[in-house]
Length: 387
Image (cartoon, rainbow, N blue to C red; front, side, top):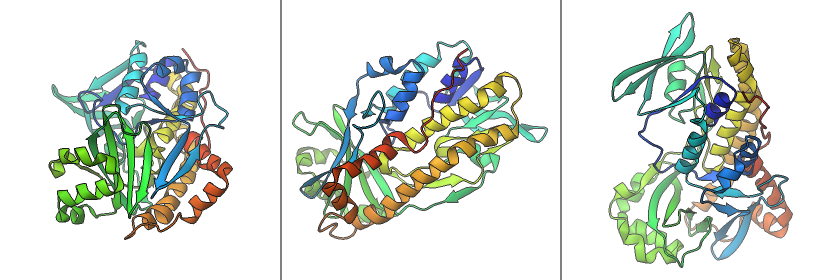
């Protein structure tokens, strides 16, 4: 949606396909990062965005047992908005669409699920999509796969994937929020459990981290045992845990960390999770996806407008964005393997692990994860290409 907005703004004809009827469903992340808000400012959209209901977090905090810790500090960042904004992802997508549809060369087609790629003369020339009205074929100078970690586009394009491994999965669930509850996002490490809570005003979106492939074993112990585990770590939830009535109320997110060896073929390019599936660590997936979109628009707009798009030009997107992706994924793998794995061990931590002890002793060090999470390692900026 971000790439579609930027290309349409520059005068390129764009069609965005969305397989669902709307955006109103539970996504994995609700975080809009400082670097994304810089992009919105450069596009002239920030003021309107900040009018939307949202929560601001200048620090990411958590609890290890009864000890509160600062994990990342954004307040020092040299940006207009030195904080993470929490807004449901469907609201952000609607926001972008509200602005993109003002351009006559932008079109969003809902309930259009891409099933295959079209090819002509040794290159991808469009897509096939299934719609309620039947099969739709759209021909295009460029097909961009932004369809996530289970990308149909990357599969049909035959782009090879390198799996980096993940020792964790995540259980997602909704729980009613009471007025007396905490009012900010937070994470908790307690008794071998890791839980993150997203405040969505009337309810909590809860992420319960488990070891890879452990969901069946948890189910075998029974729902009541799982509810008791949640209550032990977060006692204030006791009066509403009974609202988890079946395992259908709890959704399994199978965590994957991977990236494509090649992001493109002639006529097709993958960005975001379809090019590099991110761990939920740091909530940076949406941030990297938007940075990919900005870089893609910067690099390809002139070629698209001049009917001069080449395969060599497409490969520049990977050349620009692969190194930042590698750095962030390396950070995520380190956290997964050295913090989450030990936190999920039987009994959990008896004391703070050494990275958190050092950060607590020297608070200035929390600026580094603040920088990595909030800005990434190569923030992209909008180049002046308005139509």
